[in-house]
Length: 67
Image (cartoon, rainbow, N blue to C red; front, side, top):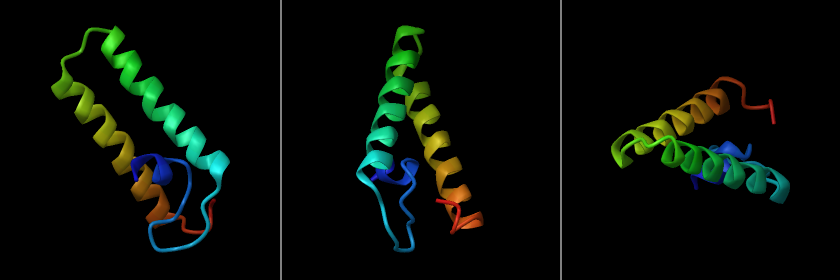
């Protein structure tokens, strides 16, 4: 679900694209891997991913026709 929202699909209905979902998966994977390589604890990695998801939801709600 997080990858789909980050990829640009609207939470209130609408269209999602496979390319956007793929980009969302890549963003989450790169963030998770980068934080792990940096030596951060899992607690902070989850916080980083949660912040990213929160930003994606706020952008989705503020600009519903952006994507």
